[in-house]
Length: 116
Image (cartoon, rainbow, N blue to C red; front, top):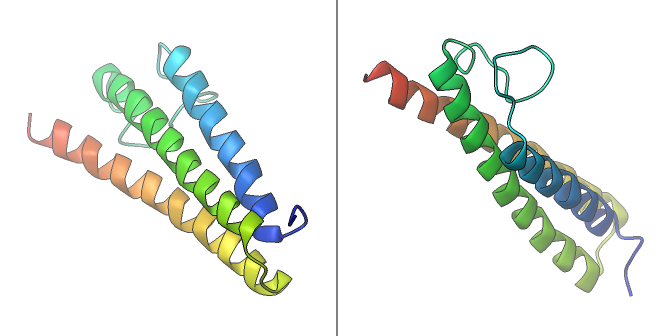
């Protein structure tokens, strides 16, 4: 068993965090634009409609990112690679998923609200 593999540890913790945050935001989305809780960017805070759209979309994308991270956790559990490589892969995947979540959500907000 490979519980100490950094790829497993990073991926499983991030999977739990992403899925939990996404489910919480779906279940209890912030109702009004605020500076404390929710997907907060300049575009998402332009109007209440864009805020509501961004909260739901980002929550779904967080859940999807969590599922992807869970897949990497399984891989990290099953394979044996050096700790440095496992750490680099785990952190690299995390960074790429965060960038994907942000870029794709911002693009969707711009496409939906700049065309209306």
